[in-house]
Image (cartoon, rainbow, N blue to C red; front, side, top):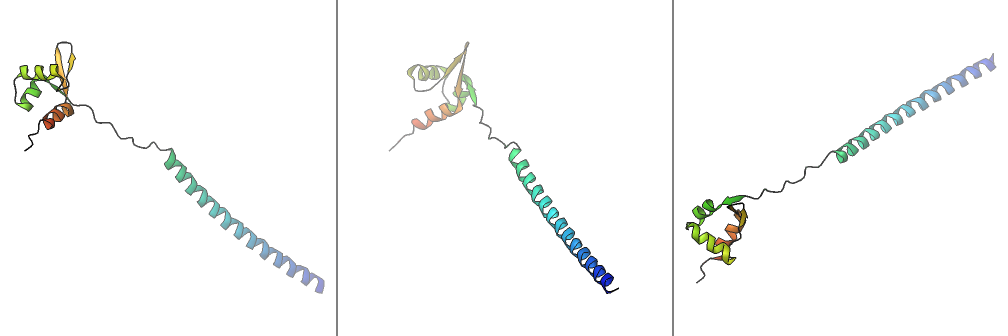
Length: 113
């Protein structure tokens, strides 16, 4: 009888130990799942396409727009282009000017005292 009591006690101890091991295993699995989810989130962020800065489109002006901006006649613009003082582009019969080139020409004619 004493022997059965010891066996039952051992069985209870082993059962309790197994429960503890199962609890620890469950906790570890839960931690691992949480870590895996965090890793997946990080990887998903890395895989998402990063927004690329869009280059600003070049603003082209017509001959008449440049005349209005600089307040000169079109023949003056033709002369500035021929002399190389103002960059211009001819597309077919039309002239086009980059806004930054017109601004650069304007700034280059600053009066200095």
